[in-house]
Length: 112
Image (cartoon, rainbow, N blue to C red):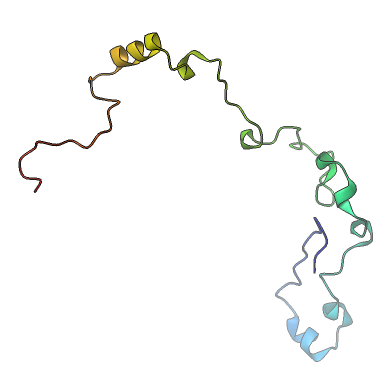
């Protein structure tokens, strides 16, 4: 099996007939064996250093990689307040009066 964050090496598609005959010992290597620098336990490292081989310190390795990893909800914002003036404002700004009413419409002819 693979170690934590071990790089995957593909054996390649060419010259595989030499691997089956065994005339070239290079193609009979175990490509899933970890390299020397991948043999230590990477789970003990901090999260910022838990990267694949050769990626630490490269560009794009920033502290915040995506917004899904952090909670960005701002409950003090005006649009998240459910107060009476805010509700009146949203109803005033809506084009139709029933734009925020999601009840099942009834009383139409032809829906039986």
